[in-house]
Image (cartoon, rainbow, N blue to C red; front, side, top):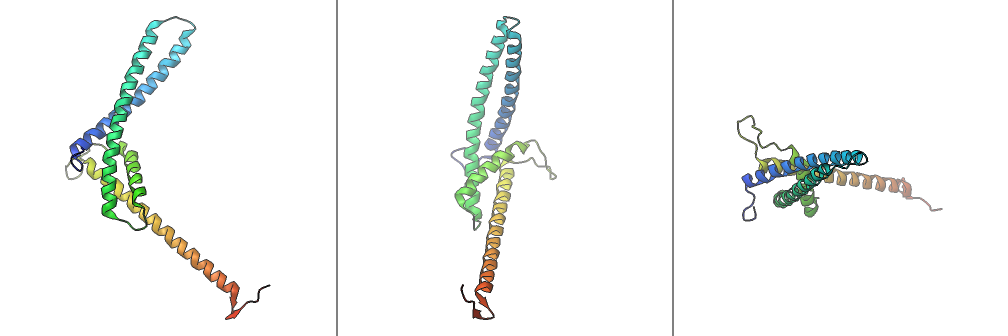
Length: 181
């Protein structure tokens, strides 16, 4: 993925790996929790070494899954960063800090990556593309950031005008300066 912008096939494979390892990680967490509870309950009654072996085996599998999950997460973070950076530089919405927008784009992608279904077939019969899905998510978020910034600046301007009118009405009445007490 480093030599080209983003290869959609590689991107989709990393996303599928990430989703798979995330599910496996959750599964192993539940299994380990259950095995530890079982081991604690039976510890007082029996002295069973097979339960310890199963527990240690599952912990090793869990650690391998966590390592794979972390690797996929880093690959996705790099891909999402490239995508967010290029979209932020392309769109150039005014009133939005580019660096903050890039970071938020990466975070939005991580929030939405679980919703991506690589087997989805659209109305036109084409399969879903990870690149298009993530680009749409990032662009929509950037548009929302722009709208929020614009509305904030408009509200600030209205409040400034309100304060200015109020101060003018206090200091000036009928064109005369009000005496200070």
